[in-house]
Image 1 (tube, rainbow, N blue to C red):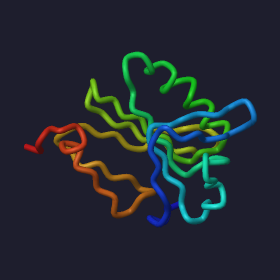
Image 2: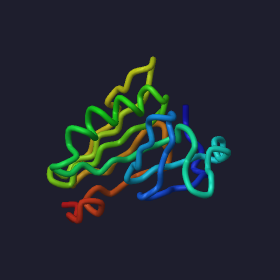
Image 3: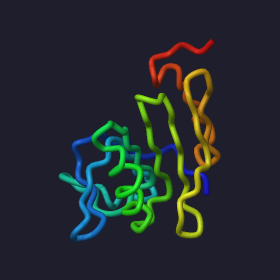
Amino acid sequence: MNLTPHGELFFAPLDVTLTDKNILQPDILFVSDARKEIIKPERIDGPCDLVIEIISPTTRRRDSLEKMELYRKAGIPHYWLIDPDENTLEAFWLKDENYSLIATGAPGRMFCHPAFPGLNLDLGRVFRHPLP
């Protein structure tokens, strides 16, 4: 499944309502035009296409375990973890109801993802390190 590049990118703070009991605020999220009906004036009401969490020492466990499980259960197809302390990006893709690590990256490499053709992130710039 390739995502259309057409949609909207949002940044925290913005609530994403997954269920009545699960309302989260991802750091960055993307909603494609195919799912734009979930965009409400004050929140996102349902699973978006991509969620990106930026890990900090105080959120590491919650982001990499608890939130990942909530996003998996909600059916969010793409979940990315950015770790600025380790300078890494891990991209998970929901397949057969489980997340699989599909791509990783670190400074000195370009990050490409099979579901996002044409997206080439210079991770040196993301992590403020020049490519060699």
